[in-house]
Image (tube, rainbow, N blue to C red; front, side):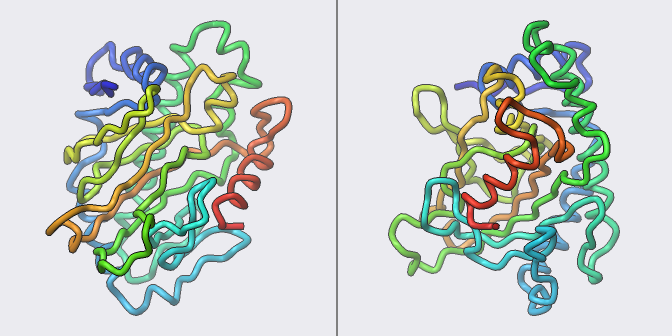
Length: 278
């Protein structure tokens, strides 16, 4: 499987991006408007947060899903073992740790703006019959939404005492419409092709990986596939190194109808129960 690398400045970028999303479920955007210096600064602040004692002051609220989720809180759908990670949830309306600068909020806003533009590309370049199948235009699904989520994830160094089969992030699909992901601080992300083979996603500073989620697959009647991906455990000397990642999950308004059987609210709640967060 070849995930297309798209130059954001190219006039043909919207079409190429949508073609890659359709064919592979993923695309990589380069030369985009989000400065890598900002991404690096945010990673540095969160690295300090996860190494601190004060992170426990920010434990998540089960009702709002905002805040800090301790190590081994979440499991992938269909798995009973918890992933080897801890993470922090940030929404447009929620707080970030008081010890942080405004950089995380700025990054959230920039990533959200770009994700909205990419969603517009998908709407514009989908076949007419697919567009007619959307219950409403994709960009308008975002009107009034407070559900879009920036998840800052920390995968601690492995200790060698992990239970057999436990990995950093078991194979899963994302819940939302599209996910926008700056390059992580270390390798480990893999995507699965239609034949079931796994492919490494290279760590390319300055690039953004974009993938389709379950909600886009549902809204498009399966035209866009929600691609399975995982984060595998590092080997050798790399096992003693941490990994940080910062996906932004673009979520529609809860009342948006995705299919005959699901609204965005009902599907999100169903999936949160499946992964142990509800």
